[in-house]
Length: 198
Image (tube, rainbow, N blue to C red; front, side):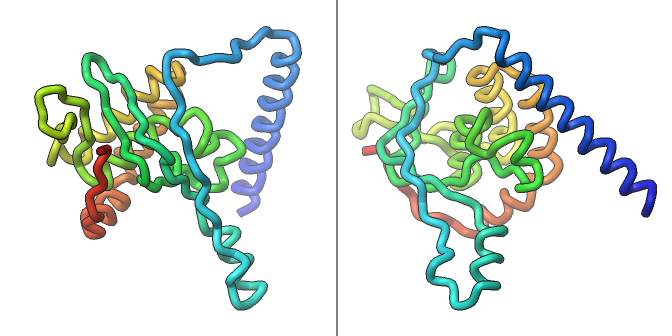
């Protein structure tokens, strides 16, 4: 037990030193402030229900365990190769499903927000809407019944295009391929009602 505590202490110290170094570098480097390649979705935060909880313990548990969810306020389009993917207005997701203890390193609404949005829709419905001028509605279902591995791969591809940090995307993809089965099965059992972009 003492060895585990020592290792955790050293890891915490390394993390603090890393963040201090990054903060120091940020003062001297000129960082680009625009990523014109991808339009951000318009999102509405869904309230975390702490006020209606019956006791302070209930409120604390809700605060610690409930994750902020976001509702897409208007249809959002993402260009992937020669296809335009669309997430419909009204879709609710939680960003990238990152354990709370890691939020100091990687926020669920930070670098992985866009790949998380596309991935969450794929996990929920096992397809994604795609613009198609030949369809009566203007949209078709793309990757219908493609399965979990396809959505995990798309997460990595979208992340690499949007944030340009392959290492972060590879670590997130590894976590998805290892632990994503739980979320996949939960979404298959949920059998969510379809939402449409039109």
